[in-house]
Amino acid sequence: MSRADPVVKLILLGNGSVGKTSIISRFTDDGFAKVYKQTVGLDFFEKLVTLRGEKRAKLQIWDIGGQSIGSKMLGKYVYGSDVVFLCYDVTDEKSFSDVEDWLRMVTTTFETQRDTNGGKKKPPQIYLCGNKIDLEHLRKVREGQHDNFIDDNKLNGGFFTSAQSGDNVTTVFYDAAAKAVGIKLSAYELEFTKKVLAVTVTRDNNNNNSGGGSYNDDQSKQIEEEDMKHGNFQDFLAQAAAEEEKKKKKKKCCIL
Ligand code: GDP
Ligand code: MG
Image 1 (tube, protein in one colour):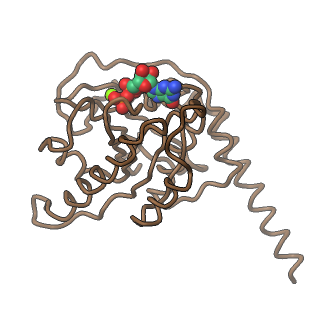
Image 2: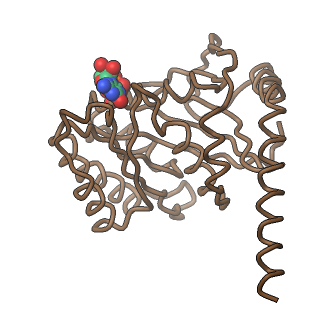
């Protein structure tokens, strides 16, 4: 694993029961090797993802467990994040109205916290995630309310997911990871992220409780080996990028 691969830390926030853990499980089970670590009240999953050609990112996904908005520990982890998914349940109005508090918690954290050297960190990219869209008949929060929240609070974007059916789950993680490292994936590439193959799951039994995202050499090797099995996926992305490039060139020809 190259040290140059950027690390993208993504944290899922939101009320209990909105489906945060289920979303993560769906993503990790749908074709992701995972190193599972239990920290104090937070779990994180880590995976090297190939975004395009040689470009990769190490995606760390943090699950806050049952922690409440006021937890000091939570503030510390939020401050370390590059991407935040503000999650609510589309069948539960309260979980949607409480998203405002979660957002405030994130913005306050970034306004008040400082690095050890006194510097200030760049705020994370924030997305609104409406989960449980499979329960359409029970839906309480309308798409318009969802969109207005994104606009009013100038979030980076938003989406709807179903951890139950798997709808949209893989795509939103890929998309957010890519954007966090400055790559925009084409619709074609995003479509392919839905078809990532299943790989074996690794459980980290040597839990060192570091909480800082470190991993030992054996774990790194295993992640890398599992990535290698995705040769087809890498080829596919390279091919998709080449086709896009060809299309662009063709368009230019026509203009000239
Ligand atoms: P968390 O507290 O936010 O981590 O929520 P969980 O992931 O533990 O999910 C809470 C409950 O909602 C569980 O019973 C899940 O099975 C259920 N759940 C989570 N996501 C979905 C979804 O997309 N659709 C449906 N129908 N149920 C879901
Ligand atoms: Mg949970």
